[in-house]
Image (tube, rainbow, N blue to C red):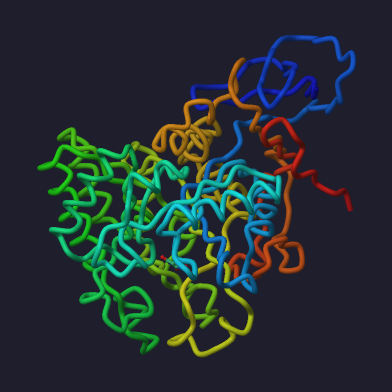
Length: 427
Ligand code: DOR
């Protein structure tokens, strides 16, 4: 039994006006009331702190199997717990790819062994993510998948994508699309625009993203199925998704903290941690992402946590692999870029980090603090300032463009399935 005392509860639908006690038993929230008798329970003092439903990240790269030098299911789960995430969705671009029930079972078994947060393996749409042959989606579902994606690549063949949407719909799987047409991205290594011209780096146009989004909206409209757009990065994509939603088409979308915190100007440092796919975009795109988060066009925040080793990243910008780590800085960035400037309220951040992502994948016992729901919780101090330091990352990789940034809003304690999985160490 765990009892959190005198803590202010923040749900997506608002704040509880006064502090409450939360009693946890067998991984569930069993009682929320004032002054619960602590008899027999481990007690956590929540006075002066806020408690939020544990964050749910639909987009995480754990690199296991295949690149355990970058991250493992255990180290990624630790990074998630430190960032306040209690459920993470593991991308299938591993080696081998997560494209059969066997690989799904492997990830689940490793996650269980780590015993930290809930890890949901996301299966591939096509075998080996080659874009040629569909995976056995019913098998993936039976093995424990809630979603499928070829993340890192778009499914380019429209006919195959149609079949993927139809089969996934039958299997009860959410299809998540990485939107980048490689014939338009070409050799681009950063956003095509003013800064790519200035820096002499090859550009990747927003068009590479929007043509896939436009095509997939048409597919979802015609087939009356759902689709989730991953790491939406530009203004035109937000416009397309907004219009699709107005017409009742079944689309949802995520944005990453880096796409609402940084513009392509950051690339002028030539820091390879600013190289990411899709790339950091122009100022007007960043503004549009924020507006999309505010008006509900963008449903949720997902990190696209993409660990890479120092050796892999310490090369010329052109040849560095894309990706940056995001689990440990997501909440602080949401506070800095969204809450403090008044784009979103704290309950709206809970909607984006917890409630909406849980809803998208059908985790009905997560994303909300209420009696009977899962005891996946994060205690935060919204006023606490901290500096992002390379040596403080618990992820195996350190490729963050936010090192040195001052953030306000700190995760203090993370509870997953009723167990404390992260506790801030006092200096
Ligand atoms: O920047 C990225 N890195 N984008 C992706 O889609 C894949 C990811 C990775 O796996 O490193």
